Length: 124
Length: 195
Ligand SMILES: [Mg+2]
Picture (cartoon, chains in turn blue, green):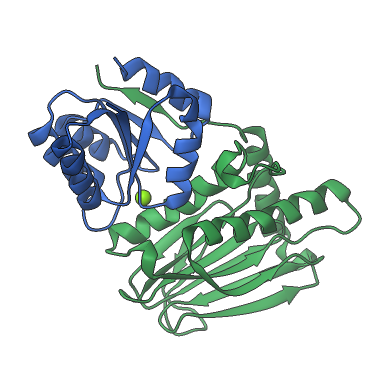
């Protein structure tokens, strides 16, 4: 069985950068380009009995934003950590993220070492 | 950024200062002046909205490319701020076109030229990965540029500035912005843990 980290961002540059940063942790990376795409991919992984260890999720995305994704994801999975990685620094949005069930909020840009530190903290 | 309701264009004019970004669905002109910085003008052709960003990649990018470079991360975040605003207006990066300007240098200064070339490389690598088409690229050269972006018809007017005296206030602000970016070039934003 593989363990997956979901990387959800509308920017391919960010997704590839995050995948690069996490490459030594030994997880499989599943990309998704918005909340809708991510939900479909989560369901496909769940159906295949794959284990999602953690999600890294952007906020501002077309089709379904990060806050709505987290709410929907929490209906499927109450415990898997979701780390928000975004340019959004608005206090109201951060509170919405927390209430939706996010585990942490990192404001871009990020240094790989800082991202790894936060990710490791949430991986069980 | 400052806004003037009445301008010589007959519509609102927004002047962006170094480090500013702004996206709008209104019929207006976005203007700025750049020396070493990059100015990007986005047009989202499906929603007919757009925006401008003024920023710099604060250093030379390594050979590993922009996705594995701590300095490029700062430039990526600068563009992400602007695209994020476009997304909030209903935009989607899959429908973006871009025009890019700036990365001017002082030809008598080697490190200044290295930074300009690194910024130009950043632009090409970034938009290639993003698959966003560059409709116009006017980068490099030993001069400053004044840019006016007319959103409604996605047209950019570019003027080469020879007389630096006239724009000394802008030049001072750009240098201040660049100095701050170089001081914080390897940074992570705020980290908040909900525990
Ligand atoms: Mg985004």
